[in-house]
View 1 (cartoon, rainbow, N blue to C red):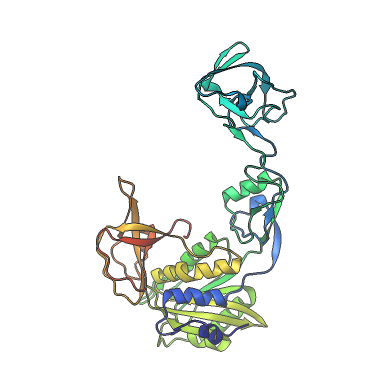
View 2 (view 1 turned 90 degrees about the vertical axis):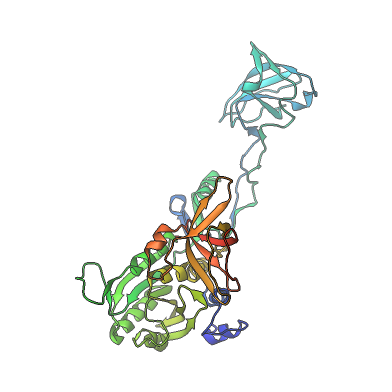
Length: 425
């Protein structure tokens, strides 16, 4: 296992006092290791889980050629441009049962959506297009072409081919696909377990009486929500006072029980508390000043307890800084640990509704509100006050405006990247 210094040496231009945001993600991608333990999971319990192996289709879907709609099935080779086609109806094919018989020239079979295509037919004309007179069906000229409205065997999935790939996070559509293959279980990686606690003598837990200079802990609840949305098992360790014995006990317990540890507070440069000292004492930890706003201070590394190593993320104390650093860095790293193949957030572009001041040399994440204009274009404006303690702005916004490291001022109408909260928070 590489040390923090060895990983840092792999990054060109690594500077712990002015680390670029892109380098943080590159560092964390080298630091974390995906879990290896797997389990069989039932379809109802698989939502949000990560596939541990490819799912190979045991059957073809659909298992036979079938009709895409209600209508009449016939041999489309009889169609002639500009000419109607008169057919004789032989009967009705229903979904769930094969129609016995053979359709020949001049024949058709009334067919329901999903029914197996009768022998001798390859085209379906929708029922609303035809004229029916007893057993005679007239297909108007040029309303269909040969092969229309027919679903082919294996059109969705062919037996023996991969249906879902290892590392894919299973969403609702994937659950339906798995069920369509007749599979009661799928192989998934075990759930990641993450321990979290807030630090600081000024932090109050809910239920404690207010006191001068103290604030109620919000980070514990936002981090819990962020982790839970990811399908992670959360070990909530509450608020830990800035006392060496309490901090040591918390870190040791967290390292022994969890794959990763997240803390908030106590990692700023020059702070006089004991959190940083305890991190150094128990693990291999780097302390960074990231060229970003909000969320400049951050600690990363490993805490080792009884031969077990847990990844550490020491986040700043301000509520917005905690959420931004989590979304920008911690979430992609945890996704890698979960075995996810795709970990980078998808950014969309919107036109800025206001001028934004920005100096090159740091990455800024401004809380934004994205709306769609009448012409269909996306427009984004900030939520106003961008202070790192204004948690209300994370509620009002629906995404983060990402102003990249080398980017300068933004004029009204300029395109900017946005990390949308939907799917991330």
